[in-house]
Image (cartoon, rainbow, N blue to C red; front, side, top):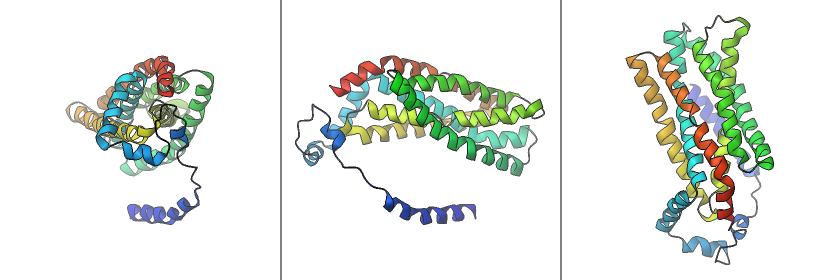
Length: 262
């Protein structure tokens, strides 16, 4: 019944899309000085699918910051997606009923997820205006600041004073959604406009195949052999390593951005 309700709600919101005003198309392409075509239509007609993919992989080779940003996103996605086993963990190993676990998780994530997505974009843009590669520097700070809350959430007892278990749960959920903005924006920054859609599609493929796909599989497999607590904790620790490619991408960002602009 829940799926039907959400489906109908989505259909009711569709007309709002008609109210969105599209910007003038082709401005990004016109900004590329090396573009040899006079119109956007000519540029699109001149690139075959094979040429688009060839340029994408050439760009990934030439722009280490781009590949490193994608890698950082995949690692965070892996760690975040592993937490889809949290409801089962709370039910089997923490004494929650499934209804309690689902309701509490939904309540926390509705607020934390919305705030995290908006703040992640806003604050990473603020970083970008002040430092070269600022969005990737923000990603490093995000991982180092919020990942400890995830570890504490998996470790603390529900009986800890001042509801620390739930506070850590909230901040863990907050940090787990703040990476979308900086990663997607960086991929678009470091990709030529004529293949930008393909680059974003490649990012989504990597995130879903290697991150969202493997995270629950690994945490669940460890849970079957040992305990879900151990599986979730290991996957959270793997998430810490995303700071390394994000840091390297931030250091390389200025050089690679200049290449794209030239």
